Every structure is written in structure tokens, then in C-alpha cells.
Length: 75
Image 1 (cartoon, rainbow, N blue to C red):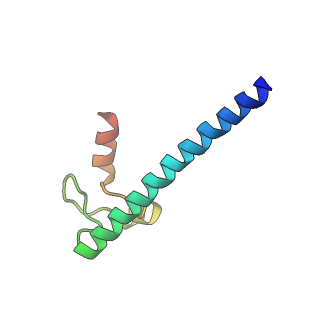
Image 2 (cartoon, rainbow, N blue to C red):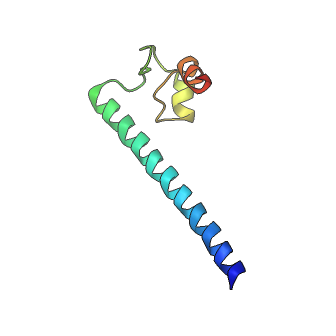
């Protein structure tokens, strides 16, 4: 049935999007672990400033301070 195929296709698209998001999150966590081991965790990758503890508590895999993150998003 065509309607069932449409629903299945939509479900497949959603699952693929979730898969991509999950892989990206795992990659960000892995990168954070590498920064912990190298002693770079908690420092902004762009400006080198210390990332506030509150930000790291909210987003433990944060790579950028809030100012740099906002600047990157604007570009």
C-alpha cells in the first residue's frame, strides 16, 4: 500500500537522522576524552580561554567558550 510505504520512508528518514546525531555525539564525547587525557579539557579550542565549569556541567563535551561558540554559530 502506498500510504504504508510513505510512512515507512518517513520512519527510515527519522532513524537515519537519529543515527547521524548519535554518531556525532559519540564523536564529540570521544574528542572530550582525548582532551582530558592531553590536559586540554576545559580550554576553548578557538581562543584558549578557560571554559566556565557551569558550561562544562551543562555540555561536558563543549569545545568552545560561550563567546566563541556564539560567534561560530553566527558565521
